[in-house]
Length: 183
Image 1: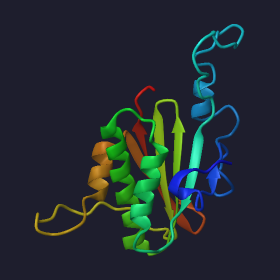
Image 2: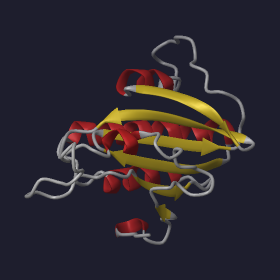
Image 3: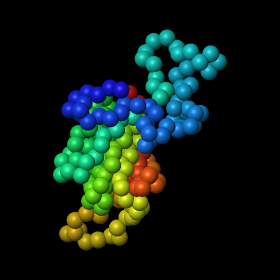
Image 4: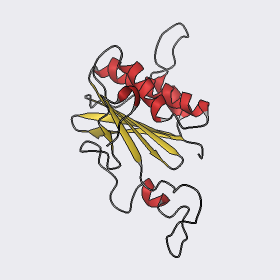
């Protein structure tokens, strides 16, 4: 388990398994299985000489989300730090915006956010925000421009490759996937 930067005191996991509330995919399933032979000789499984090894396991970090006014700002900074090596600033900006929206929704609509999970695999970022409410996220109907709020799920649907939600304990987890540029 590693921790660095401003979040060393709050980082719970840098754990490919995801931890007890965030199970890893079954063996042979998930992104790691798809990428396990990428960059390797298909016959021997060995890596070609030269260059750093390609990641074969997802990298996951978790940030607890307490019900405090600064939680969304902490989540944005945590995400930017997690993606510090991403070369495309627009991808980082999209990820930070979506984290802000998902965390803000969890705070605003449930009052009891649980945690932010960020998982990186080759070319992909999964963002997950858990909360204590079992109610599914529902897009609001179009509204007048002078009204505030209601754009979070619209932004999610426009910026993410895909998104969804699933029950998680007594609450739910809302997730989305973003494409990451090749390093």
